[in-house]
Image (cartoon, rainbow over all chains, first blue to last red; front, side):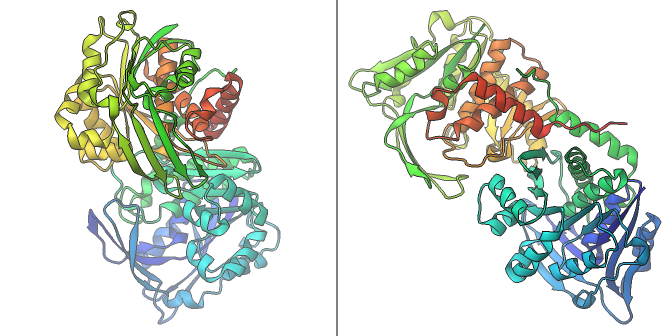
Length: 308
Length: 308
C-alpha cells in the first residue's frame, strides 16, 4: 500500500446544468482526487484549507474513505473557497458565475511529517508557487510527482509554472492548454515540447474525447466511455487524475505500461463521476461497479487484427 | 476476393489549407473510397459520372489500381463536378467557395451486369434517391450495404434519406449529423435511434477524435492516430469508408468483430490520406507502410489490465 499525497482545493461548488441546479455542495480538486484514489489500496492524505463554514459531514465523508486530513487547515471565522458555474447545453463549455477565493487566498500548504515520504504526490490545480512549496517540503524524492494546471496560470503565473514543471514527472493538461503552453496546434508536437520543459510523461485530457499519454516517442490513448447521459462534468478531470494517481500509488509501478493502466482507470472512474451532480456518484461507488465498467473499456477498444 | 461496388463522385477539387493551395486536382468520394479499398484483395468497380474535361491520367490512376471503370460515364462536352474549399487554421472546419454540379446533376447510375452480384455495396455521399436506385438494380441482396450521407440531405431530402436507410446495413455519419438526424445529443442515444430506422450498424465519425461503431448494445471505438501534422483533411472520411468497405469485401465477414477490424483499417488509411493534398498520399501507398502503422494503432490502444 503506497502513500499518496494530494494537494488541492476542498471547496463549495454550486452548479447549474440543463438538467437542474444544486445548492452549495462539496467540491474541489482534492476532494474529487481523494474520492477517486480511495478506490485503490492507498494510504492517502489531503493537504488543503477550508473555512469554519465547511460542513463536518463533508469532512467525515473524506475521513471515512480513509483519507488522512491532518494537513487540512480549518480557519476559524474563515470562509471556504466557493465556485459557482453554469454549463451550456452541450455540457462542453461553462460560464463561471462566481469565484470567491476566501481562505484559499492565504493557503500555505504544510506537509504532515508522516507524508513527507509519500510515494506519489498529486498536485491539484493551484498557483504554481504553492505547488512548488509542497515539492520543497518532501524529505525524499517521490517515485512520481503529478501536476495538474490550467490556462489561468499560463496567463497569470507563467514563469512560476515553467519553474515548477521542471521538477515533476507527469503533467495533466487539457488540449487547448497544451496548445497555449507550446504554441503548437498538433498535440504530438505540443507533447514533445512539454517533455522538453521537464515532465517525462504528458497526459492531454480531451474531455468527452478521451485522454492521450505521451512518453518519449510513445503514445497511448484512453477513450472516454460513450455514455447515455452526461449529467454534470464538474470534477471529471480531477476524478481522472485521482484514479490515475491512486492506481500508481497502489502498485508502486511507474513504468509506461503502468501509467497506461493508470489513464484507463482514471477514464473509467471519470465516467461515473459525470453521472450525478458533484461528488454524489463517487461517494458510494462500489468496486464491483468499477470492475464491471473496466470490462466495457476493454470491449470498447480491444481488437484482434493479425499484424504482419 | 470479394466484389465491392462503389457509387459516388469522381471530381475535381481545388483546396486551400494554411499550408498551401492546389489547382484543380483529382477528388470525389468514389475516388478516395476506391483508392483506400485497393489496399485489400478486392474486385472493385466505381459507378460515377464525369465530363470530357476529366483527365485521362486520373482515370488511368484508378484503372491501374485494378478498379473497374465500366460504370463510369464520360459525358461528351460535359464538365466534371467541381468543388473548391478553404480550410480554417485548425483544419477542423472549412468554407465551401465553389460547388459546380455540372454532369453530376444528371447522374443516373447504371450498375454493370457483372457487378449486380457484388458482395459489398458502398454508397458514397449522393442524393438518397440516387443511392436507392443502385440498391434497386442489384440482382441479389449484397452481404453488406454501406451508406454515407451528410447534413445537406437531411436538410433537403429527409424523406428520401429515411427511405433508403431502411434498406442498408451500415450508415456512416459524423457526430453532428447523427445529432441532427435524431435530435439526441448523446451519441449513444442517437445511435440507438438510427438503428431503429434500419441500419444494424452505425458508424459515427468524429474526425480527429476517431470513430465509434454501434451494434445492438455493443460499442467499439477506433481512435484517429495522433499525427505530427495534418496537411489536408479532404477525403479523410471517404478514405475511412473505403478502408472499412474494402476490408469487409476482402474477408466476406460481416460479423461485429470483422466490422471492428474494418473501422481500425479505415482509421489507419485515413491517417495517411491527410498527410498530403487530395489523393497524393494514397496514390503510391505501400502495404508495408500500412502494416507498420497498424502496429502503431495497436500500441496506441491496447492495454493489459487484469479484469476481475
